[in-house]
Length: 129
Image 1 (tube, rainbow, N blue to C red):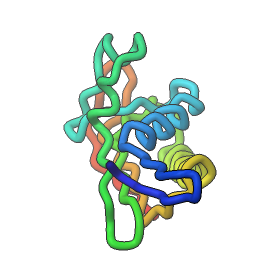
Image 2: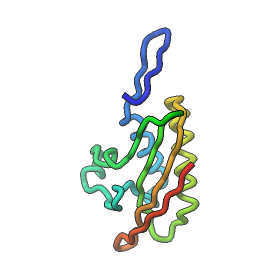
Image 3: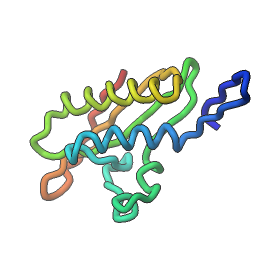
Image 4: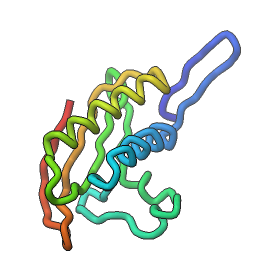
């Protein structure tokens, strides 16, 4: 259990896969300019492309002192502005998590682990708020 809310009608619990699914939807909105990766820069295989849970394993979602801490590892398509795409992803993750769950976020970090053209060129760039 990641977050628990008590109401008059009962208890609502929000699990990590819920936050993970919100993050994955925001990555999909970037339409192929960004892909989820492991911390080593490996892009998940066929399982994630057909709707499996493989990508959720690469997201770090933890409870912090003042809210949830999120770390997302991504690779970016060559020719895409790293600054623009990471800032857009940070903004959309913060907005959607707050909108759908009403959970406060302590920090959100997007780590660019590589650039993709024909092959993956390793990088290690962290953008956080």
